[in-house]
Length: 317
View 1 (tube, one colour):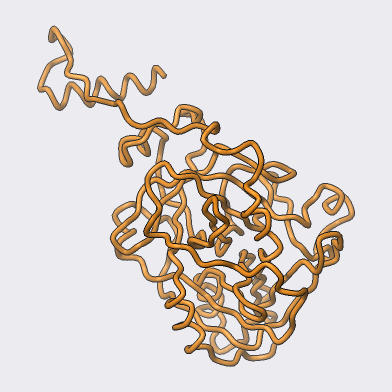
View 2 (cartoon, rainbow, N blue to C red):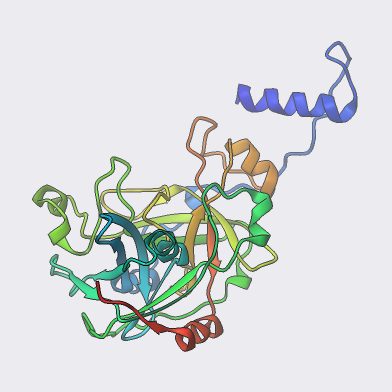
């Protein structure tokens, strides 16, 4: 609080033209709407829970180089899965002319911890560039970051279809729910395929995805939405922050509609900077906390249809 007050006074003195020896400071109006963890329900909305079986882990690799990229994804029909375009691009740009192997790791049933690795036979993606270290000024100009993968196998009946929502209806302060197979804060791998986990990791529940509540901050001109985590965990082990491995993970609204996929973190130095930039107050995140603002790629029925038309056969490594 002292740190925050000091920043307010410094800013006010510059705006008002007062000197340190002046009689008053013009303090700006900071009566922003406040969001807290109480804005989330105690239990994950049933409509979101029903969608969790559609969430997968996506593993890309260049076998000849021993390089891998771990991302998340979501099943959108019997054989197609969405993820983040940069998960494939970051490998393909290094691999040429070598082969990139993309596999989907999917749960088989609610009770079975031995998930299955699905080979991909077709893919299409929109992405060119580098999303590392995104700043606020970059957001309206960054490219579409989606990847569509097709597999010839159906790991489990597609009984709860993914419903595509409307990201344009997201407003500041709205709760969102991100589900993904990012590693834990301690660096332990999450995967629906227990072949990639130790027995201790399986017992710890790491065959299940991380599930966290996030708050929408702003929608940009290109349709993408900035959101902030750090407030609510719904998984065991609990996790509230987005990190590497979450890319491509589905983002749902309270009705369980897929409104987008997580693609990258946005660079902020402090929670005070976030609050000033987006006009929102988040008192539960202190100045000492890691600021966890991430970008959500908008998804629509038409964008998925475009990707399906553009799919090309993948090489077999």
